Image (cartoon, rainbow over all chains, first blue to last red; front, top):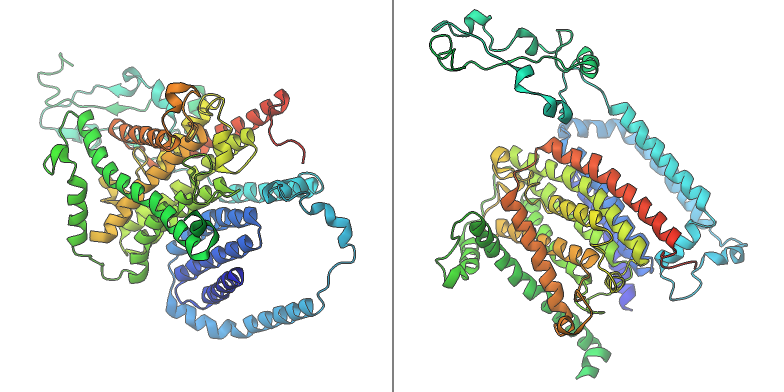
Length: 257
Length: 340
């Protein structure tokens, strides 16, 4: 009795929130309703006794996938007026796709029957009531279906590497911290003392405290961050000149420096 | 009496309510006093006195803060998404509370002693990011939003290494039940054979709770106060309490996974006189002290350093350790569970 009430509550909220995913005006609300739907699905799994699946659903879909979803949707710059124009244009196509899916679902459910060889997969059922369903799942996944399981993992790995390869670009202007290089630097190869005449400021140095090369990164070959710089860095330490001009340098402080 | 609680429906419901209160009331009191303890401990580390006006040694400061928060005005920024704006702090706070349902305080002493306790904890702690993300978005403020985005990236990154560390512990236990995990540490606490994982888990816990030195989502120096910059009064208070309750939860997880939960350090006379729940509390308090100690000691990480640590250091290391410990357990025949 209690279980049935809980089931109907979960099922009703699941269907409602799934509807709201499609109907909500604000895409962020859609994603949040999607999360609610995941939650209720997890609740249904719990009622069915599939505690491992329920927790995995929450960890994987709610804890990771939907977070990234929300992350992206929140950063999208959505023009709502434009979206509503689109609805009228795409409604017929969407209607056709929805209709086909509905017909397929009806056909699938009206011809639903239990497979005749059900007895042959009896070994999938946990052998004893003490065996938790996590262990029972492991018994099946890592024995009879180990190759399928591993191929699933490989497919995911390929997808992951593909995503990284497609999006990882080495921008010439991008700066990257190289901790070893930082630690290897010494004052001797990174500092240069210049004598600047009093009152002339940095104009005598061409208007820069540092050489031009360290400012215009992309255009000068061999400067910081470019391809040539990296190759050079592997062979020998480049001299990135940082010039420190002490106050009133060039007058009386030069001997002290 | 016992019959009423165990064999009648209203009695069972009442029992659940009482059990919940027995966990939540000490927890909330602990959270209130953790805020005071943090200020006191940090003050001591910095040669200051800390709060010392309200009551002896400032012990009433927590209540003074609570009254202040309750009587302030709740400000909702214009353009904010009103419902989600108010929903976010409640979510953060309640998630930090519900996770305690599975924490065992003694042999079998948990509100729900479920088979997949560790997964439940992992699921709940991975939901914590939503409160922050929603708060950042619903505030309609760029600082809050940036804080929310940072936090999402940070928590998802460190969850990966937390998951792998938990897997290595589970390999040595052979069960997802938190009760079994503690009982498996009867001979030796896991913090000794798995010392590197203990450290990785603790640092990841710091990142997961947005504590210093990984408190970039708040990042006062660049984001004002990060995701809760627009919050005030009770809503702010709930975030604040939720954050501290999360520290309690993470300390509880560290205690259960690595410090032997309610078990005494040695199973001999003077240690066994102290009841189990007190041992668990002592361990949680020790972890909390280290949380505060770290905050008083280390400067904040830069964001790319944080990501580098999570993905390039902790992830490969914990993965390697997991494979290594699986191999070790297999070779030495210590692998629990066996063929089923």
